[in-house]
Image: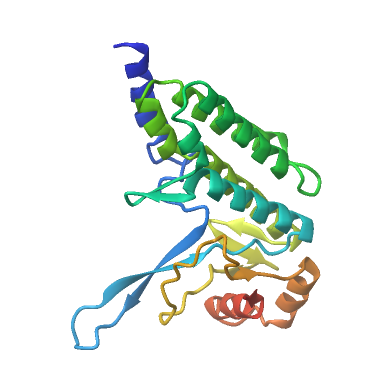
Length: 252
């Protein structure tokens, strides 16, 4: 087996395989997809409807962090998903990547500029988060060096979108910390009481709005969030409390 064959096998088994370190295969950096069970109007079996909404900006982060995240998401979208080619999203890195050597160098420069932008968050970007960025950038570059097949796999890998997702998760954890929240098995803990994930209304519409065209986002300062949570009686039903919190901090 040649070097190219070994590289393709490694990529398929180690990078694109779904695992705890790589959830990009099922997790969209730009949209949240929810499944809601709906009862049939004719008495038949209930059906599951998928609801797609633009991802919310994490609550509890500063205005500067919000601007940086929006900028990173916008640029990553341009670089990885700007065009629809036969039903598949392709960005500028995929277009310039077909040019041998020059395209690969341009692609890595675009990705490094995205990292530079992400480092503008308050307090800078932690070294472990930067290392994750660089790992995706290096893998993307090495994939691009494989003739012909590498260009196709590189388009599928979408390093910039992966890095945008990494930044979003970092800022989400940062916002929760600012609000005095912690997580226990995926649930938010506030004053030792669990608050479950936001409930999704069954009558929500399937939202296909581009994340670049002013999608709906959650907006509120850490002080406002803390005040609102204190006003809500956390002893109520957790689903209801979290739903009210989301509704009151949701704006278009």
